[in-house]
Length: 135
Image (cartoon, rainbow, N blue to C red; front, side, top):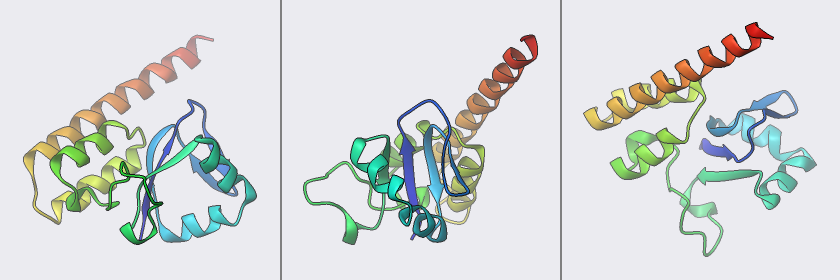
């Protein structure tokens, strides 16, 4: 089952050939397996640099109530889904969330939240590109 991972630093990181952006990003099983083979993976999780914000309930650490039980916004409550959407700055992850919701209940509030976040992320990216051009 995929996970949603939050990077709590502003720079881009990588484990193996997998790029990890700041904010929340979705990773498929194969990617998680590849990252977990790297010793840096455990260290980054333990130090809080990376935080798993959703994963299967069966593997949740005891006493950790904040973990959302699903990695699919279509399976989350609106409140949890919006929390995840607002923390996601990766366009591909947001697009995947939109596709999942489209195949599920098609809740307007979720579509609106994803569209607003996509707009924000896109405008932030445009601003960053303009800053780089000025240098």
